[in-house]
Length: 206
Image (cartoon, rainbow, N blue to C red; front, side, top):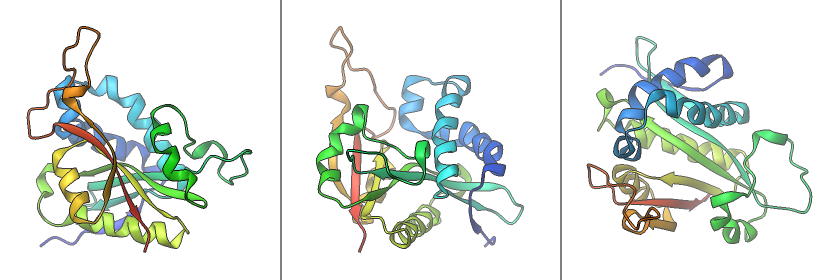
């Protein structure tokens, strides 16, 4: 079996990680596939998330023995809202706004910060090898070492939802696709696999 190297993602790797996301993750993520999203359409959003993850120092990549990226998780900090912005990372952190307000009640019960996982992706050529579990165990170790109260992740694919469930994450918010309708009352997203909902999942650091 090839030797796989887990390492912290850095800003110098931004273009390599973007290429991985646009060539692999884009075409396998059920929501992207269902909506027929293009690389050109997704690139600005992917880069926005990636830059936040890289600046926070919380993102990781796994490379194969040829040095090619075969997996990544992109993560940042999510802070509990306070009366003043006194964190140390300024604009690199996610603040409570928009749809994220759905978890404000959870954050209000926590002391400081969550480890927020925005993307987890493993190459289609390296599935079912325990790589996703490895990268998630590393994320949990990172969260504990940085004093986070817990980990929060967006699970928008059936397979990732099953993975998070096995790893002990609890669903704190769920939106079924049948309830996500356009102005004409038609379902907006119809995935080609078993994915029929989006979830926010949470695991408290032990």
